[in-house]
Structure formats: C-alpha cells, structure tokens
Image (cartoon, rainbow, N blue to C red; front, side, top):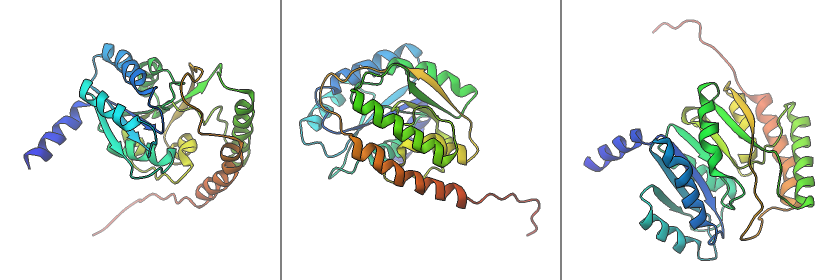
Length: 249
C-alpha cells in the first residue's frame, strides 16, 4: 500500500512527461537525454523522460540503463520484440504521469527546446502539433511525406500541414479516450478533433539526422498511409455522438 501511495503522490508532482520510442538509436541517446534536461530544467517544472526500447538490436538498452543511473528523471520500458513506432508511443503515453504529455522522435531531428513554447500554448488548446518548417531530409522522404499528407487531407476532409512531425504536446486528459492502432500515431490531431478537443499546428525546428538510419521509406510512408486513412475515415463516419437530457432512477 505504501508503494502505491508514493506512486500516486509522485504522479501529481510531474508536470511534463516526454515519451520517446527508441529503435537502434544508441549514439543518439546521450544527446537526447542531455537536450531534454537542458530544455526543461530552466522551466522549474518537474518532468520525466520515458524511453521505450522497441526491441533494439544495437546497444540502445545498455545505453538507456547507463543514462537512467545518471539522470533521476529517466524511466525505462523495454519490449520483448520490435512492435513498431505506434506501440512505443502508446506504451510511453500510458506510463506517463505528467499533466502534459510530449512525444519526440529518438533520432534527434526534433529539438527539445521547442517543448516549453508549445506547452505554453496549452492554455488555449488541448493539443499542439509541430510543423517542420525547414526540413532537413532527403528529397525522396520529403516527397513521400507530402504525398501522404495530401492523401490524408483529401480523404479525411481536414487541413493539416504535417501529421508526420514527431513533436506533439497534448493535455493528458485529451488522450484518455484515444485508442491507438498500428500506424495511427500519424492521426493524433484527427483523433483529438473527433472527441471535440482543440488543436493547432506550430512551426518547429527540424535537424538533419546525425547518427543512425531512417526507419521509413516510400512503402511504409505512402502506401500504408492509404489503408490507415481509410480506417480513420470509417471511424469518423461511425463515431457515435449523443447527449443525455434527463435521467430518472
């Protein structure tokens, strides 16, 4: 009972939870931890960094354990096998204890220094989503991303600029009803809007990948996006909305 009570108290002390899925990012991890610390410590708000090892085959898990011993704000989750980016985000979000939940990619292309600015906007919104203004990616990745975003907007009848951007800042309560399926991490703005939450997009920094290789290509970025879009479109059409005017027991 004491342990459960301590966990409950600690949960109320955390303001920001940063969730990062990791797959073969050994060299990036020390930089990521340091940058999150440098970005959030000056805010004076308690925070945690949740690293989810998605079945890495390099030395990522050992690096994560070393970082946990160095930084008190780090928490670790390790999958038995590789389950994909959506599963890593889902596990991190479900473990998060902060009132604000942030997602980042583990490749250092997102800049943690953007987090405080986006988090401040939650006074007016329930979700703030990054838009990579000047992307540092190969042209083939840029083209596939643009096609995927165009397809999503057309099929779902929304106007979203960059659903693939990894930096997202959301109110914890807005995520309570979100049920993620494989691939649906790209639809966080749509899923929140479906439940009546207010969202906005903001330009953020984007950096070239320094270590490691991208896990995405034309096949899993464009063609899979079509099937995912059709699934979300079905969800939007079948969504139930009702209000109770009166009850009598």
